[in-house]
Amino acid sequence: MNIKNLHTIHFTGIKGVGMTALALCAQDLGIQVTGSDIAEVFVTDETLKRRGISWKIGFNKENLKPKPELLITTGAHGGLNNPEVVAAREMGIPVMTHAEALAEFASGKETIAVCGVGGKSTTSAMIANIFAAAGLHPSFAIGVGDIHSLGAPGKYDKEGKVFVAEADEFAISPGVDNRPRFSLLSPKVIVATNIEHDHPDIYPTIEDTKKAFSEFFAKVPPDGLLIANENNQNIMEIIKNLSIPVKNYTLSDFKLKVLGDFNQLNASAAAEVARFYDISEEKIKKGLVKFTGTRRRFEKMGKFRGADFYDDYAHTPHEIKSVLSAVKQNFPEKRLVAIFQPHTYSRTKTLLSEFSRSFSDADMVAIMDIYASARETDDLGMSGELLTEEIKKNHTNTFYTGDKKAILSWIKTNVKPGDIVLTLGAGDIFQIYHLIK
Image 1 (cartoon, rainbow, N blue to C red):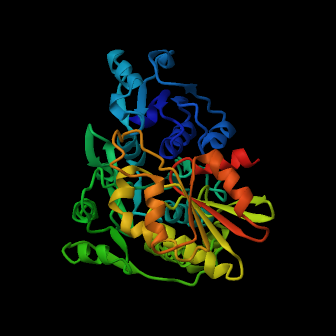
Image 2 (cartoon, helix red, strand yellow):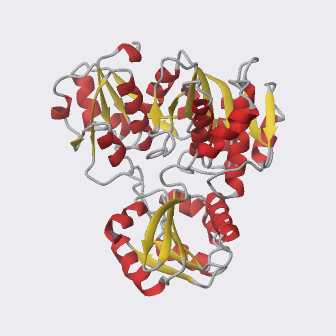
Image 3 (cartoon, rainbow, N blue to C red):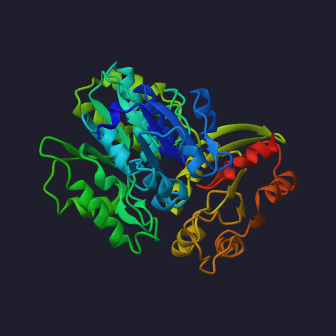
């Protein structure tokens, strides 16, 4: 099946960030897009509405009328076991996972795959920005709600020769197909931002994680390139044993509109990709300075009670430390309040010690309830209260706050005019801004 020649595609779980990006690619190709998802507000709602893409609430057979030529399913909401997906197969509708569909959309172009535990969305967006500023018509599918400077998180342009793909190491369909999503891609260039222990429900140890990345790196062809963060020990250990073309990168000093050393690293990686494609330094700088960030990556959310609120997707200890450090460096005179919603019981349990030491740059810390993944049936004895007690061992000014409504009361009592407030997490913490408004 040539996915690009289809007339109708249905997306089960269309509001997921990766799914929305693919839906926009399909729409660019003139394909009629339909979709379904849960009622909960997602960061992609505004993007889909802006493009005139609607969705049905819930997952059932009725959503497949009229019958589409293909169904693409998310890894969430049961993945391949979702009742809508099962119904599609019974009706003879071909089914693809998001990972399979991403590989299909990218085929026929040179794939620039950006992987890593943190930084891959921003780095992918920076690369797309540089190529767009250079007039090279990039296609891209990036797992964020929106990319402000590009106007969309996904695009398919028939003129350009590259496809920038955010390459995720998580499972294709958890419990059904646990192969890494990025294993289906055929990259010409791979960018590796960092490797840390994440997704312990799929990769029990850091060695399991490193094995998955090592196998992916080995796919780089002789005329391609692996662009590797030399500051990450796990990456450096892996590439010692591989016979592929490698270019290391480290901190830069580009003029950027986004803050933090971690974004200078992302910009360095993006610049190395551009140099591989013979884009001039002038055009690289032009593309990077045009980049103004993405949804949920240190995104300014406005003022409330005289404090400036920002929202960030950071959900691992390394990411939390990096963004808090960047904020403290840029606003040293401000009191920094961190509000964290832990994401998944398994990650919280496995990385409990690391989480307990991640908030040193915050002046005050609030911990919400754990946002449980739909695939988790056991809380593993973990809770927001327990995480709070662990953090208190290293940071006494830490408070357990409970759910989204409870955090509003806590904010009213504890946040002061002039504070910088940073909401953190990969769950639905961003929804507190709807409640604030």
